[in-house]
Length: 333
Image 1: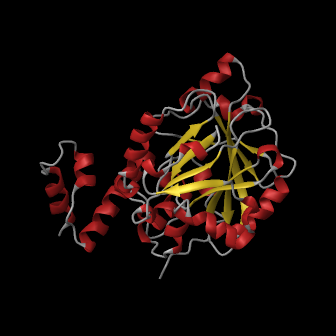
Image 2: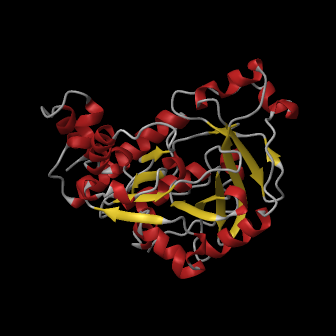
């Protein structure tokens, strides 16, 4: 089917009225048409985010390499790494289980969870998507009925439909219950996200609430009051952030004046974290490996094979090339 006719058929679909949902809801495509649809949607979303189409024949930028991997990579290992349950076993095979948070159970149905056997604080997540996380922190009563509805919605969602990230498409969906992690201060555990190239960590970033004045806090309003602090391998703060959907670029003064960058204390055992993610990521041209470090206890979070889906621009945009340079892209034959 020619791509123009395919798009015309989708837009005329009576199933739904919104064109975007019609694209995602269409069924019955053959393999060739489906690949064309994936390409069309991924490139359109990329253009909307970056203002241009990606060069997939000769990807140079980090975002272009992410998009090329999303559309062209076929190796099954990436589906394994995208499955939050199977990825735990991958890490255990490489590093042992000492770096895994406690897993209280994995279930096919919410009704199978025996809440009487769980501690007061825990985390519910599913293994087949992004941001499917519900935290029971013990500070307020856990609303089981609301949780059932929310988790049920997650379980009915194929994350591939909206993202075109095919590594999630055939994940055997499970509900996971893991231990609740927190910092010694009582704050939720900080997430350390490492960019690892051929087993070598080059960059990482953390998300935290900066202790800044009211004027500076306006910069972080669009990210829920949180700062994304980026660092290089030498733990030097980098003047860059990611633009989330609906965000405008930060004022230029935010990057030109280093004093406007919120302070973040690097953990004392950061070198051990570098060593661990390097060993976990060996053999892969690029992986983002997310870790925790509450009270000095280093723990694996998850793999991110397609950070931001390639559609979260760097601000300033020059970092799209900086983060790309260490990545020697290798795709399946």
